[in-house]
Image: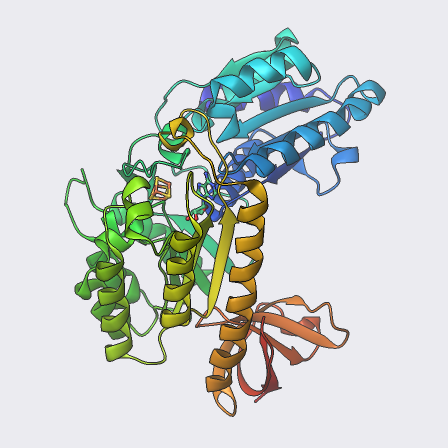
Length: 453
Ligand code: 5AD
Ligand code: SF4
């Protein structure tokens, strides 16, 4: 890899100006993190970075394949690049990430989107300099979706934020939930060595990062295959001991592996946010079985009850899929019932999207799209009422908030509390990147609002 980084550097040094690259990541935090590593690789090759695709000599779309609409968005955006390529034939267009790992994408791109020069899969990040060098020198279409060794950690990510950082602790997934494409495009679970993770977090803490998000498809099965096999709870305890003024989050645990030890650990560790994103997916045991989720609603509720018995303030969020193949209204009502019973602080709900190659794609599905959309609307309405009621528990209380953006409402800044609740407060952009205590004075169904103390 280093050999090709040097070769590209050499090529670039001969051009009259520094070429710029533009990398856009779709989808989950893991993808965003990969995108930051790609930027790191490209900047070590000598590229400058731009946030304007029009001024770039290299555009890379780091794609997501989890739902069909994510894929359609990518095709739409690649389509638009055709004009840019016509104006600037020197432009190189690359596609990577989960979609790029799918055979059908490579075929479709080759036949219909000839403006694309380069496709590399999720396992080929470390090969990027080599592949890019081939495109630059041979001016031909290059693709690589084989499995390679991970990108060496010596390559520094170019991070988008100076105060929030995602740190991958594992890659891939072994769960094969029947609806999900991830195990096929990201491969088997691989944990990073704890020393590598700790070193990266120490460095981020020294640089003043305020929030570290540990990333993995199933973080609580962390540890498999390590030289020193430690579990996720132990990893959290070790990270918690790192000095610095930062908080720790993680995304996402799987309900089947969510032990009491993990919940106790979150409560014991002062730096770990008291928030659990625990994807339920469905409240019907029959559907959970067809989804291959390996837990029942009883087991899920037992975990929720344990959390609540230990700390009523602990915040819970979840993912829900509406309209799994042949889901009935009765199944859906069971989901809604659990959502109402648990009183999640927030839910992320998705209409089932058929992903070819998965087990669920082979199941017959007689549930109509109209029913699926109607149930989704019903679920969202129920959740709005729950949030409205549930957020009232914060009235008059102080929440710790890391501000991360200006609000759409003029004069306000916005951020997330440790509980992962959106908080708005009167203030300007100088507060972005700072953690402040906010006294909550108002609640809405999507956020709370208050005054900075
Ligand atoms: N259709 C709809 N939603 C899906 N998810 C994963 N695969 C699919 C699919 N085929 C959702 C799950 C998961 C979240 C990241 O995306 O709820 O937790
Ligand atoms: Fe997909 Fe299930 Fe793995 Fe999550 S745990 S990435 S939903 S297969």
